[in-house]
Structure formats: C-alpha cells, structure tokens
Image (cartoon, rainbow, N blue to C red; front, top):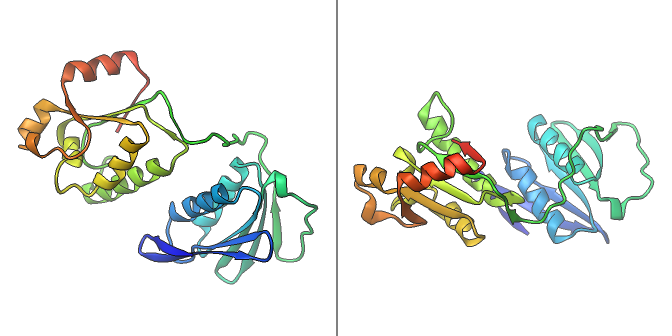
Length: 228
C-alpha cells in the first residue's frame, strides 16, 4: 500500500512469507518511525525492513526498534539504509555479513510495549507556536507535534489553551484534524474564555470546550503539568 508522509510517497509491502518492507525514502522524521510503528502494530509477528535515505531517520528507526525489544540490523547501500527489525516472537539466529551491522540494545533502553492510553499529564499551551525563536518555524514544529501526539502510545489527559494558543481550536486552524483525533480517544481539550474573547474567537471554537482561568489554575496546582 502507499500513502503520503511530508508530501512524499510511503510504500509498505509484504515480501516473502513474513517480511514487510516499509519504504520511506524521501520522507522526513517523524514519518519513518510512525510508518514503521503502524506496520508493526498491524503485523506484530512479522519481520520489518524500513528503508530510509538519511542518518537521522536511520537513528530514529533504530531507537524505535530497540524500544520495542527488536533485534536491529542495519545494511547500507549508497545513501540508503535498510533497517531490519525482528521482534522477539519472530527472532531467529541472525547472520551478520559484510556491510551489515547488528545493533546491540543499550542496557538503559526503556521498553515501549504499552497500548494507546490516556495518561495523567496536563498540557498547557500558551501560544500558537512551539519553542522560542523563529515563530514561523515554531508553527511548523507545532503542527508536527500534534501529529506526533496523535500517534503516541500514551496521550495527555487534558490540554488547556491560553493566550494565542486558543487560535488552534478555532475556525481556520491548521491543527483541527489532529486535535479532533485526540478528542476522539478521550483527551479533554479546553480553551480560555477570556483569551477567546480577546482574539474574537469565542463563537468560532470548533474543537474542545471553553473554560476559565480558575479551572486552569486549579489543574496547574494539582496535576502533573507540561507547559508549551
């Protein structure tokens, strides 16, 4: 099958009886990891070979494979990297030949085998861009962040939006699709009413509810909080 990641075609194909190839060459992170994760969740007993064309994606797919307790083998062909992930339930003795690297799992690696769940954290979104510095870059990062959060195994329990962050839940926002996906799996979204009034958006909220600063303050004092 084929879909799109960062504007590039992503191809996933079954090769042989039990090997799935995920070709994400031309795609930037986090697409290679997310497509590999999707393939693995759909076929938990298969062996996976993810093909990437840059070192950052290679390293991220390797770390993902290690976090899922897979044996990881890397082969290079020019600018392309072939990362083979073998889950424990499909593991066999691996022959490592010339040009092939068997990656050992670090002793400190944390295993991720948790199904999708809503955790206990609360996100406080204070602006419509992520990080400090160039705001155009920050808005691109924010869009990627929401996409990554929809694909994460554990979601936050609540997300509060204040100041210019409320723009993301209103009509015309580039983030509505991903935010609606979060609501669909049980994440509570709420935007500050005072802030919506300030930006003239109170009648244009598309996703989530409208809350007040008292409720947000109470959550800040009583629940594990992450501020963006």
